[in-house]
Image (cartoon, rainbow, N blue to C red; front, side, top):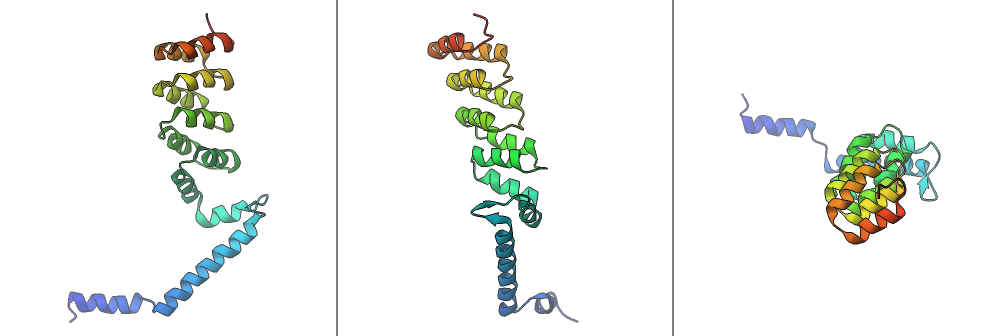
Length: 172
């Protein structure tokens, strides 16, 4: 009867591939990815519809995670607005977790398919007067009354004044 060490060695020998087999397997994977990328990209961007091959290969969840790792609100926004079936809430939360009012405002500007109220609340929570003002001024459908109260709480005279002058629907 084999002891534990011998059994593990036998299993390893049976299951393991030689170095050459492992290398060939990796080369085949690389070739497959290369072919996929050549098929999906034209002039450095996804060709119409062909991005689906790429997404099917790497998986949508993996793509979302890789884009989140970039910490780039523009990339995250592009994924939300251009790829069907992404987890918008997960991607929004990633941008909110950056805790940067300018990034949140920029994200709200560049994306069409996001929850603006959620982004608005995140900006209010950060208490950045400039971006509260910008959100009220430039984001369609912003809750002006809520943003007005938030900007007053910042006690930033410059942006309270600009808010009163520039933002329509404000109660002065």
